[in-house]
Amino acid sequence: MSSQASHSRQLRLSAANDVSAKPSLSTHISPSSRREGCEVSDTSDADGLMDIILPLLDRGREVAEQVYQASLGPLRVLTSKSAQKAYLGTFLFTIASLGLLAISSTAYGLFYWKYLPDVSVERVIYLQFSNGSHPHGTTSLSNALTSFQPYDITLHLHLPRTPANLGAGNFMLALTLLGPTITNPSTNAKSFTYVESRRSAILTYNSRMVDTASTLSGLPWYVLGWKTESEVLKVPMFEGVIFKRGKGELPERVELVVEADEKMQFYEVGVKVVARFGGLRWIMYHYRILSFLIFTAVFWTSSMTSTLLAWLLLASYYPSPSQPPKKEEQDPTSPLIKSEPEEDTNDPSLTEGLSDTSRTFPTIGRYPKPLHFTAAGRSDANATDVKQEEDLPL
Image (cartoon, rainbow, N blue to C red; front, side, top):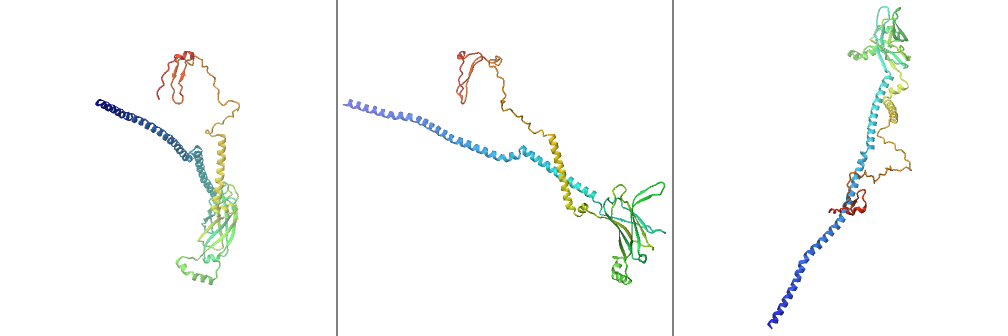
């Protein structure tokens, strides 16, 4: 009985050992299997994530490139060759316009100074008094007159109201315009006379009562020296006198002779020549600013037009070297690509210096088949002994 009990106890222990051994085996194998499963799942998840991220990155890169190109668009337009040519043309046009405007303004100034004569010319005549002759005097005009220009010539006589001048009554004034002096060896020097005028003059008459009242009313001014007992006579001698054009046709001197029965006294004698403008000279003198603007604009427009025509003429004769050459018209039937002569592949000179051994070269990428080189002159039947090289690991 005891032997049976011990035998049954051993059977139970061996069964328990078998049962306990099975879980230990399962626990020994499961960690590796779990790691492999985790690695596979992690790899698949990473690949899926990269498949999502990479297109997004490519799309973002494309959008950034498009934004960058769009931002560079205006800058490229502003810095393009056509824009640079436009800038250069605008700069040259502005410089030429300003230069021609300055030249036009200067030209109008010179035209004004040359075309318009002096408005007024005043000269003082110093009279000469001698026994047996009338007071007379001469003054120079110094080429102050212009041809075909009407002039008004007036004498200004400043005389004191002395009893001698008042008693002279009417007296004569003879004004002569003289040309250049002509020297003749046989005769004395003589001046050419252009025109002569004789006019009478007289001091203003005042009765004794009026004269006394005027003197008494102005006595303080006479005492202070602010007023004198004198009178200025303005005697017009010529009205609208015109001189011809040509050398020696303009007067150079003025001569005055005072013819009076009494010996007269003078403070000062002068002659005033005033130009009587008409037509264009009248407009240029009375409307200076408007005339300046109009004539400067006309001069500037004509100069710019002439410059532009000259530029176009030179450009037509001398074309710019930067222009691309003209393309010759191509026959549509002719081939667009130049045909090269075919080479003879069996020509031994082409393979001279190359090895006779056939080789196979490994490939990478999307070309799975290796490249095979067969030496010229060998058939595929003889290429069975070609040494196959191992593919290099990627």
